[in-house]
Every structure is written in C-alpha cells, then in structure tokens.
Length: 241
Image 1 (cartoon, rainbow, N blue to C red):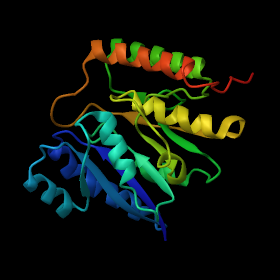
Image 2: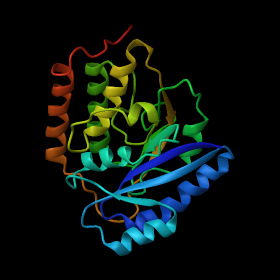
Image 3: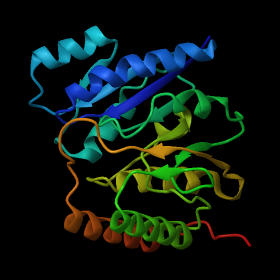
Image 4: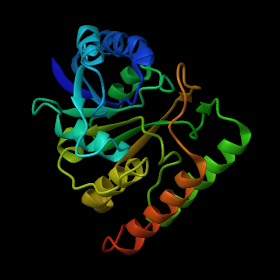
C-alpha cells in the first residue's frame, strides 16, 4: 500500500468535517492502493471536544501556529505530513470539494508534479454566482499568464502534490494567496521540466456555516502577492509558446 496525506485547513468547520472525513476515508479505500492520514489544521481556540471528535472521525487535528491565519494553517498542515507519504492532497473543509474526486487525482500518472481538480478546464464547473465566476476566471488567467503557469485554475485549493515538493518549501503568504504561492514555488523548483495536469471537477457551495473570505481584502491580497511573486522572487519561468 502507498501512503498519502490529506491536509485541510478548518476554521470552525466541524459540521462539514463530520461528512468530509468519512467521505475521504471511503474515497481513498476505494482505490485499493492507498492509505491516507487526514490532517485537519484547526485554530488555536479550537475546543478539546472538537479535536476529540475529529480524532474519533478518523482525522488528526493539529493546531496552526504561530497565528490563526489561513497561511499558517497550510504551513502547519504541511509540516505535519508523515515522512512516509508520497503525495499530499490539499482541500477545503467547507464541503465545496467532493472527496470522491480524490480517487481521480490519485489515478493520474505519477509523472505529474501537480494534479489540479479544476473548475475551468473542459468538463469542470462551479456553483458560484456569475460575478464571482467572472472575478475568479480573471484572477486565474492573470496569475497563469504573469507567472507563466499553464493552468486554468491556479487558485483552487484542491490539488495533489508530491510530498517531497510541497513539504520542503519556504512559504510566506498569510492568507488564501498561499495557494498560488505554493504552486508557483513548485513550478519554480522544477523549471522547464514542470508537469501539471488538470482534471475536471465541480466546486460546490459550502454545506454548513459562513464563508471566511472577504471580497475587498481578498482582491487586494491577491494583487499584492502577484506583484511579489513576479518581481521579487528572482526570475520566474517564462511561458513557452
């Protein structure tokens, strides 16, 4: 059996985790080839009872540090990955990502450095409103073009990485923009040999609770990060024709 880690940043998402963790366990078991640890990166104020329930469901709660930011949730989750894991799958904990997609992410050739569960490749879709879809597509096109990444859905958090890539990086972003930073750093590491595959996926409306994203700060942060990655990180790869 091969080993992987599933990392989920979770900020008061217990009602969704009650559905997601069993779903992830079932999806991985259906492959007949993989064993998974499910790492749930919770905030510092997460009650002991919630951590206990996550454990009972089959997950492992780790407390993000040093702050409760989304960036530190990702960093803490990646730092907690078992050394036995070949792959890391990162996904949201709000129910917007279907655990059933995990089997398809794992079925893609091992030669791919990153596999993306994509809303915007052929066959993908999203339940977001039209204004959000327009904003998201514009953001993804801009990031892909400026940073030279051939990917239609740079900003989705639902991706499969090699553990040796994702767990050995220095990531500095504090917010949701760490998703783009992680992909860019792996792209930068592999250079012209970088291989990325997109499989179509559906992005669902969250099942329980309220979104943590605020549109104004979200846009400002993403534009700031784009400039930082493009102009302050040496020489990013150029897009090939």
